[in-house]
Image (cartoon, rainbow, N blue to C red; front, side, top):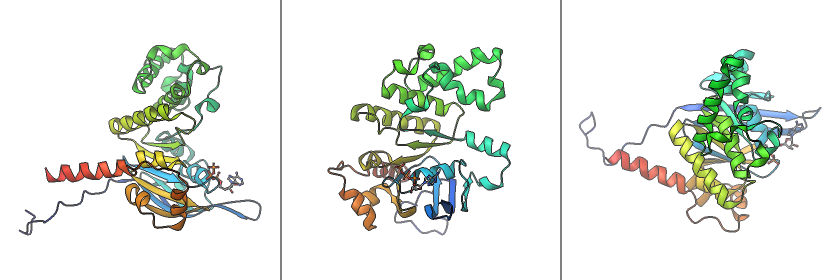
Amino acid sequence: MSTDGTTPTSAPEAAPAPVILELVGLRKEFGTRHSNVAVDDVSLDVHENETLALVGESGCGKTTLTRLLLGLLEPTAGSVRFDGQDLASLSAAQLRRIRRQMQVVLQDPYSSMNPRMRITDIVAEPLLTHDPEARGRRARARNRERVGELLEAVGLDAAIQDRYPHEFSGGQRQRVSIARALALHPRLLVLDEPTSALDVRVQATVLDLLAELQQRLGLTYLFVSHNLAVVAQVADRVAVMSEGRLVEVGEAAAVLRDPQHPYTRRLLDAVPVLDPRRGRRAAERAAATAGAQSR
Ligand SMILES: Nc1ncnc2c1ncn2[C@@H]1O[C@H](COP(=O)(O)OP(=O)(O)OP(=O)(O)O)[C@@H](O)[C@H]1O
């Protein structure tokens, strides 16, 4: 019964999770005469613990947008707020502290790994860069222990620490790069086509791992992808980007089943066969929320 004495006819809507990342009127121009507008008036909220997929064709501005939100590029106009703080208002030291909370996993981890570095040094690299306590000879044993924990968290054996990247498969290397991304206890992961270089079977195991980590660690994912079948599997919401603009943002199930924008429809039509369970994750979450509310 509600406080005014009436009996609600349906379960109350769950309060939305807090906003962790807020993009407001973001614009980025390149070129001497600002002729190339890579990101054009993008406003978007990302909520804690959700997976927001950013989709669009090559060249639509996805990479530029992620570089802006990570504070790696300065916007021509607009702002990026992480946890309520405008990145432009921060000192270099404050920006470094915020950046620890946002980590990136790239499509091809091999290209971002120094082949001459052992796995232990690859995974510990963010610790050594950001955490003064991780430097120095005395910290070595502690770092190894932490790297071991991180490797186990992504389903690898802690004993692989002294081996080199070339000794591992693509899927295992992607697990190593996820372990590295988790080293600083981030809150937001930008997953930039994290499974595109993997075959379908391995892709599924990495997606399962990401889902499990998200639940266990309360992570928020910005999942950049052009693969709508993968997006259907992982996303709570989808943001569709075309020529620098967001043309459609909504619940994954709704956007993928009933796209409103002609560009989204074209993207979907270009996928030969989309999983009939498309929007599965969003639908499952909605059902779980409804179930929890009715209990
Ligand atoms: N540093 C730069 N200097 C000039 N133009 C750039 C720069 N970075 C990106 N651009 C341009 O901005 C536009 C958007 O590029 P961006 O790489 O963000 O797209 P994308 O959607 O990530 O593409 P892809 O999926 O191929 O990586 C393109 O026209 C690109 O040429």
